[in-house]
Length: 109
Image 1: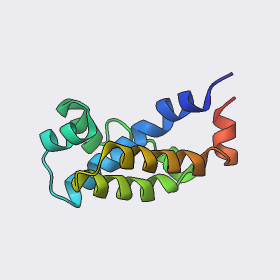
Image 2: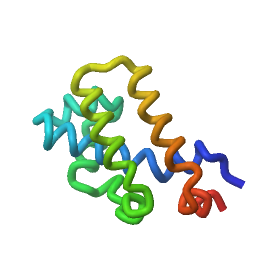
Image 3: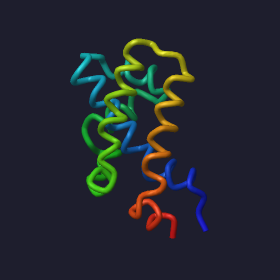
């Protein structure tokens, strides 16, 4: 049996981080080192996200299109230097949206 948070951490968060990194780069023109500071990951991880070597699981995006909308909201908040609580609230909203979906329940098995 898997915990919901475990599935989110292993499957959803890498995709979300990649989408946020791509948005911060494309939409806000941030450099990799700036993105890494905002996301709390290494510059190398950001490089992987931007090159789509990591977090580019398209089947997850198809199952959970909410990730795209959340990534835009989170990247905007990060760009504006929102407080950590705001970012956590946005992440919690995403989890609440997806955890009742049939596709998420299938990932729990």
